[in-house]
Each structure stands twice: as C-alpha cells, then as structure tokens.
Image (cartoon, rainbow, N blue to C red):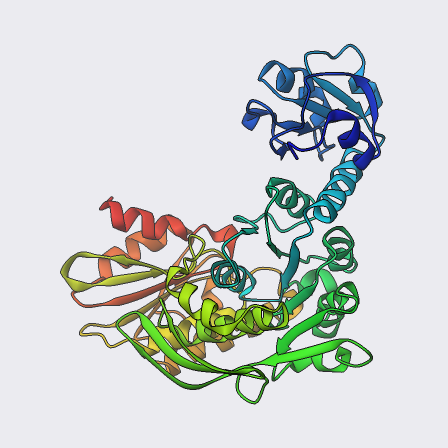
Length: 443
C-alpha cells in the first residue's frame, strides 16, 4: 500500500480523515498494537472483551503510519494519519478489496474440510515466483484481508486460504478476494457441532462455487457430499483418480514422490519433496489450479522441489536410536486422521508404530462414534500402540489414556523404543505440539 497516500487509503476503506500524517502510504496493516512497526496502519477492531481503538494512541507512539478507529476513539489523536470509520473491520475488508483490484494479481482461494493449508503451501510454491500467500492461520474475515494488504505491487498471484466456521463465511471471503479460481479440497465431518449436519457443511463450502463467478472451481474427482452442488454454470476441473488431473505413475521413496501428472494440456513429470499419499492428492489439486490459471506444467514441475509446509503439519522429528516422530498436531478430524494413519501404516520401521491421538473437536452428538471408528482404523493400518489424549481420547479404545499433552508425553516416553515411528495428531485445542517439543528437547 506504499503507493497510496492517506486520502486514497481513507477513500478505499470508506473512512473519514481526522488528522493527517506523512506523505506516502502504509507498509502493511495490523490489528495488534503490540506488533506495530514503523509505517504500519493499525486497525482498532472491537473484540469480545476490549476495543482495539483504545490502543490507537499507543500504536501512533510506536511509529504507526496511521490508525483506523471508531469516531469516539479518534478524538484528540495525532502523530500520524487518523481515520475514523463506524466499523473498522468493514473498513479493513473494503481497503483489502480495493488493494486486490489495484494489484491486478490472479487470485486463488483454497478451502475444504482438510488439507487446505497444505494445498495452499504447495500452490504458493509452484504457480509462480511473484506469489503472496496466507501465513499461518490468516484465513478468516480478519486474516484474509490482512494477507491481501501485505502483498507488494508486482505480486502476480495471491493464494488465499479460506476458513469456514458457519454459513455465509466463505461467501464473505469471496466478496473480499474475488477469486479467479477456487479449490475445494474435500468435504468431511468438520464443524458439524456448529452447522448441524454434513450436508450443511457441504452447502457452506459450496459458497465458493458462487464466489468464483466465471472462474474455475477445482474439486475432487470423488466429491462426496459436495457433488449435489456441482451443477449449473460453474466451470469445474476435477483432481485425483478418475479426474481431469491425476497421477498416472507415482512412487514414494526416501521422503520424495516422483509422479507423472496428467492434465488436459498434456503430462509432466514431477518430483515432490514429500512421501505422503495424501499430499500427492493435495499436489494434484494445486497443479489443477495452476493449469486453470494459465501456468505451464514445466515451470510448475521445476518449482516443485521448493515446496515447504507450514509448521505442525507432518513435520518429521528425529529421535534417539533411530526413532522418528511425525508431528501433525495442527488440527484433526476423522478424514485427516485416517490420512495420517495411512501414512504411519506405510512406513517401514524396525520398531513399533505408535499413534498418539488427541480428541477431535466440534463433531457434534456422534463424536464418540467418530473417535471409536478412528481408533479401530488405527489398528487396521498397523498401529501397535495407541495413546488417547483428552476427554474423548478414551473413545479410541487406547492402550494408554492421557488426560492432557503433558501426560501423553510421559506415557510416550515410557513406551518409546529403538526404531519406533510415532504419529502425534489431535485437534488444536489439545496442544499436542508440546509432545514433539518436549521429546525433541529431551525434557
């Protein structure tokens, strides 16, 4: 946004200029006054317990280029641009929408019940060099516009993760981002506690189909609950076995996957820096998106080795005596649990396969049944020891039960042997990342 002066920033955000500051525009936008740096634009958003506008003066004192606050918080402020808006969140979203238009970048939106962060990571690596993508969990009505406003002029692609916790949220994000293409990775039993049914989850994800306008929607060849929504005029490209983009040959060896990827425009060999089967599906979705955005296959294959994943997603931690721990603790649901357990079962080990499974949240009245099915599945793919963590961890029918992550660490430490392979996975609230951290540190 450095290319825009204060008056244009105010106009794009629908805000009123109360006080003027330096020439030029802000470096980025932020909503945390503690993170304000020189040249930042601070948005004082109203929270559940506090109003961020109360920290606007501190933000200006900390070097902020300016602030956007409600009118009652704008009085008496100086030391930078002071912009007043009745709804600072709406101003943030409006400014992001206008900046997205100014950039002229191609926009890819990524949503789905599982895998969306990994697909985002893969797509960001392979579709181009001038790419800006969502970081960490910047995938909400706040995080997505902040991501857009981080992008510099010259950005050619925006890869935006889109989270969903209720009806209408994907539609809202699409209004801000106006994607040229969207990926819906899958639809599974996630957020059922909030939405009521799997069909309602599918309908909420399907908002992306309307949000992409005359662009393309990238969807699985086997779309499951999403299939009834794949009608009308939306342009589709399907990925995976039986789809438009698929792997004719694939082999996973030594932490890499070599695959011959087939698309409507031809085929191309890829070497991916991962060996999980589910990540090959994620890569096919990303390649399909690149295809519909006009990116040639050969450059995508050339960039594939530089793929890196966001933290806590399949990180491999080497432990003493040849044991390894797969830290996939960012989140969990029945679909992603099965995929991670499949990977655990595929590993060649000299010791045992151990699954440390934290409870899965927001599964509604059938939560215990979902946990029981995952526990049974763990046994079928070769898990010889299951440690269940959390209140519903007992529903996995585990060999060891742990009340929390600390107890799970002690239980695992007591069981861990030479050559073991350990999967650690659970919903974010269980904080199982501490298991990997403590074992790695030798605590």
